[in-house]
Image (cartoon, rainbow, N blue to C red; front, top):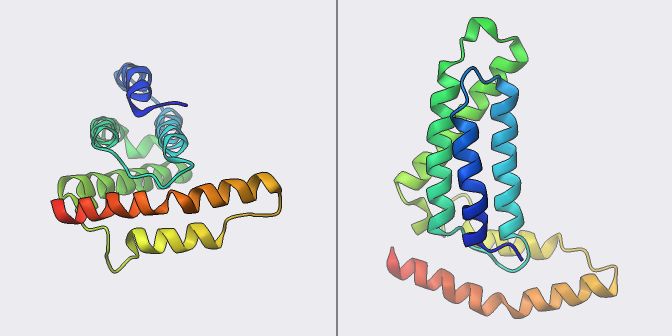
Amino acid sequence: MLTPKIFFQILLPFLLLVSCQKDKKIEVYIDEYQNLQDTISSIMKGDWSMESDSIRTVKKQTYSKQIHGLSTLENSKLNTEELINKELMMLEMENELNDIQFESYFLPINSEGGFLAGIVYDIQYTRTETAENRKKYIEKLQSLPAYLDNQKTVLKRA
């Protein structure tokens, strides 16, 4: 399994190297962003996962560099699709940076759902057609008390 420590030892130097390239095109920023999202998603897949401080640190560093790089792209040299992609990516990353800065992860119960809604949606959309899927589903349900304990810890820290 790819642990967060291994993830950051492998991915962070790559992200920093790629983000230092000059004259990048919008496609490179999109690919970097998507690669980071895919990697984080693969780390958090499976049991009830919570975003770690190390993931937030990598997001903060990467998004800050990407926003800076995207802001240097001249809008007049971008076609309509590229301009929309640039604006949407910057909006998404700025929103994530605000969440990190204001420690919104300390508000796990909020008007937009929070972890309780995540549990409901996850259980609701779990596929149980095969024996393997049913086994994974049962294992995930058995790990739910530990996840709830982690959430209580976050609430107490907040």
